[in-house]
Length: 199
Image (cartoon, rainbow, N blue to C red; front, side, top):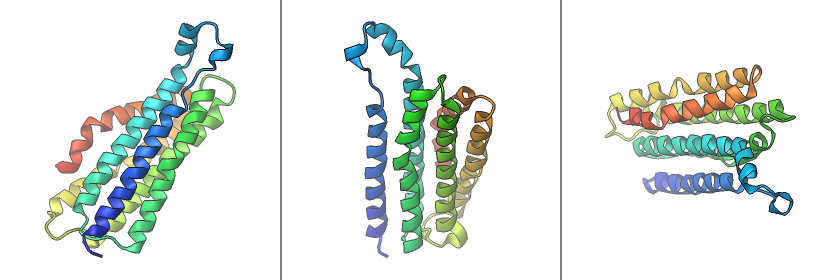
């Protein structure tokens, strides 16, 4: 497929990333008709802020890394497009478990809410890992001008993804709040570390 195939794949993906990130903020709201102390109500929304920031940064990191990965791809084929759709499926689903965390963290039902959230992130990490492994395996879809050192560096950057998010899921069985905070810490670490993809 010509180079425009990678352009179409990235353009469509960018649109889904943008919509998913925008939907996150729509989950934050206050029922002003039944709220007498707005200041306290805003403070009580801290689980919503935590879930929003964590999910937004996570989506942002995946978007950045997706861009750098697509830059190395010289062409796309049907399997890669299908795997990309699965990745976008999990990305667009993320606002739902984010809302569950926002509504139930430190309340009844927090464990299943965080389980759903952490499981979604695990699936996202596994699928994105599979996306890159398929594209880069044997340089199947890698452009000829891309140095092998760059391909290897991206592969190394992908290695910790699934184990780290599996760890957040396991932590959720002990402490749902700690699991979400760990996810935020991972996102905060990887945001400036996105430069690893260029090394």
